[in-house]
Length: 313
Image 1 (cartoon, rainbow, N blue to C red):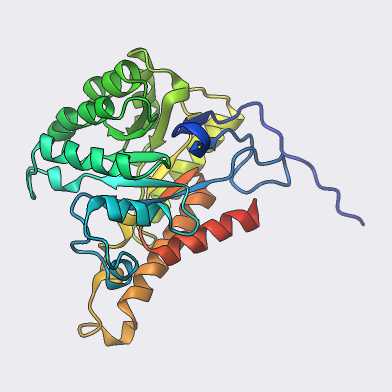
Image 2 (image 1 turned 90 degrees about the vertical axis):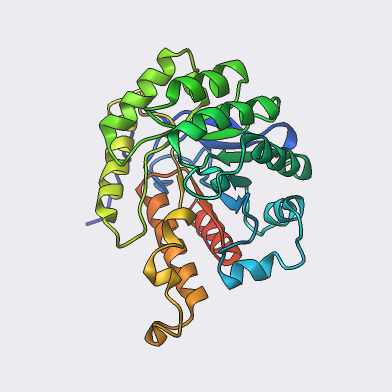
């Protein structure tokens, strides 16, 4: 008996959000099927891959990542090298040095780094805060200000600071707003609701619904992304139709499998290869679960995930 495939058609569709300006603009979202279900409907925009760099330079990075940036002495050099990485669609600048519990760099110092990076590259930019709610509420609106006209994605507003960041990024300076919630469909929905109530256009919002390294409670990530995509497509829920971006690098390179030295765990093999494996596995799982863009660090990871996306598109 012949197999007759039945197409799965949905009434809903994820929003298409543009990041960047000019010829280098990238589009994420805009699809009406589950990830890689191109047999149900054509893929309008394939998933995108970003390269994460930090205001801390090359400090604390794995040797394989440092090797790629050999010879880079300034943030501008690092940014150019990241933008040229094979498979990269955009650059994501993490301002982790602003954390009051860490380096506690001043806002002025961080803004100078943002300007240096932005002047060095013409590719789409994502700027991530330091993950401190109060500092980000002060820092990210100023980032949105100095990058006017670049249509950057500002990551991330949270429930505690959405008024400051959403109003500045999404309204005053017409940037793309990254809404971050903690692996819960209801929290993601609520943050999108209050952000749009501020007046931010739903077409200028991207969700970061949280993640985890593969093997670390990852079933919560899968179930959350799956429920969000199901509601967006099957229920036509317009407060969950924003595309999803996932910063994978920050979740993977700190776990013991990626960071334990070969001296401590010789049976685990090369520390660099372990880190690459964890990053690739997590990124692939995120994309299959529903993420429309991932942020990685290692050039081997970026190349591999980019090739996977092209092969499955």
